[in-house]
Length: 400
Image: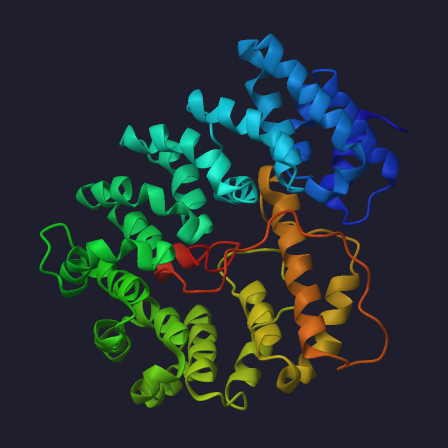
């Protein structure tokens, strides 16, 4: 029976729902049915054929400005942003002005598909409030980190967060901004060495990495991140050594020793770092293959999606992965682990990761790569992972 509840269930549970399901979701939000907001917010390219109707509906909600329509405005805004449609900008500015930017990190990454130059002026006032409520900062932090160098006009405001409980986020953003943050190199070095009174142990590696990204000098990053790996703080050092690549050759043996770590996330990070440092895929590929569970449901305790991404990064030498990945991609069922507000986003990102991995690996198995819907939001550029306290999410190393 074609009802709205059945349409919402279908798009949340199935990768390739019947076309009428998305049509019903769009029509419901247009008519004010808030029960469809969560699905539409995650739809992105799946509703590209309805983009004009969504844009008209968003304009109508913004013109009325009823307090009860904020959820619908967010859903319509994210649907447009997820397909890179700049007609989402008025809605995004409205949400920023009202302090209603989405607090879920995956949804914040959808907004990052919009041009930074157009949205940053609306985001800066939110950043400058320096609220102590983390949910009000999450979207802004994720946007700035995803925009990278384009977020440079916010650098001075970001530095002020080094004095708060959000210092880790600030360091991460400054590293993503890169050379435009070079003016703050001394402060980054102080955090990396523990000399800054606000510095904590989990700040050191990310600060050292940010110092390298800002200055181009890898001396401090190699020293701090290498020491973290040798001292047992693998989660704080491995992703950064991977980013440093061959420059971290002096730490290759220590990294290789972690391929047999009891922790799955550590083994996967070590495999990635060893391959990036040495260029030798032979020890890394079996570790990554072992981390790919065909029955993975999206549980963030397991690094399955990250292992798939890294196999794709290795490419042809990881050809043994192709017969394992193709049936996963062909599945009709979405991941089941994330709650409904993130499930479509989680699954679409997994589909994209699988698709890209198979394309980079090449013809490792017979038959074409199964067709799949496009991703709603691209991951940030693979620069670096955060500490493992942030790594364990369905997006993998979210702070990249």
